Image (cartoon, rainbow, N blue to C red):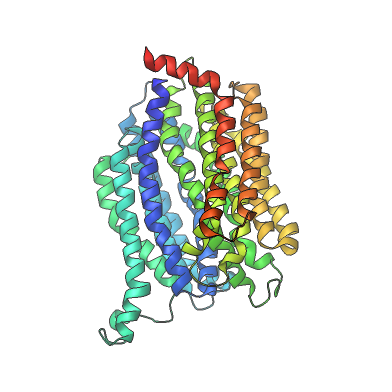
Length: 500
């Protein structure tokens, strides 16, 4: 119980910072949908999907490899830190330079003629992200959750502030005559450009702070240390590529797969903007998963030598399912006011019906993360590649066949289907090689009931606003009652433990 309390405490710190940070960042959805065109938002969706994909290439699983080797016996964690950071700096500079030089070709390929500067900025963003990966990982390993959270929040504040300044402030001041035209070369017709530029500046400014807090490193690339780390991380690279394909491919390909005029009055790129904006609403679930991952990954590795670790992993999974199921219901039944609050221009609400499916997809992603601990602690990371490759194939298949028929829902179903398949396969092999006593039947029951309540609450509608709000949110009651009945023995043990 004390171990779970420790995990919960770390998750709470990461979670509060993530929720605060994402809430601040969430304001950007309001800014983008209110001040930018749907075409600009479609560009934002596609380019950031590319960034998410290439982020995996630039870090190639070295974070997880760092956790594995820094917590290993007979190894100096500071030496592991210095060597992994040195390797990432070298590789990110090489790959960043290559992408920078290839920007004109990439711009033409993605149908952004004459805008190669977008992809030069993308190369710099990816390089900055890569050289921050290991220092952030070290902060997590050393349980410096507050320092980690502070650095993330500073970056978010800088990014949001620059977005507001460049997208709202400058245009208003130029139009009202407070600032002259072409002030500092400002371009009134830019949209996605200022999103990328804000991200680039914020990431660049935070590097010295994070490096200082993580501790400066001595440059070194000893083959005897890096080779086993590379062998461990290489399958994780392919796992990451397949995994990010599952998560981002629908947004990256949506505008290219969707037939023209599928949605009357919207081009394919504009429809991609609507799809991407609604995808952002599901990030409320993803930020909880991210917070859990920040805390759980180093924690799980540290506990892997404990003989009771399988039981601990099962308890963590069960608590995760319960919490995230409640969150899924709470978000889904309130989408009728959450949607209009953040999607500020007409037309975006047409895609709200996909959000419960996306929430369930992200929940399954969190379950997969819990399940995946077996191949990380047993050094069977090659399984990760085949599992996530299968998920990627499922994702691509669903996108290709369902987006032309179902539009937004086809894209959402690709997320749900791939993480469902990955979770099932990962569970099957995990129970063969590293059995964990998961409460599978109970967990599946909770998930199915929560999903039914989520969609029922989304489509429920009453004329009276307050009555509508109360009835929708009352759907949480039957689920909570189900949890209380299902966890009766656990709660009684907990009550006894507290008394003693």
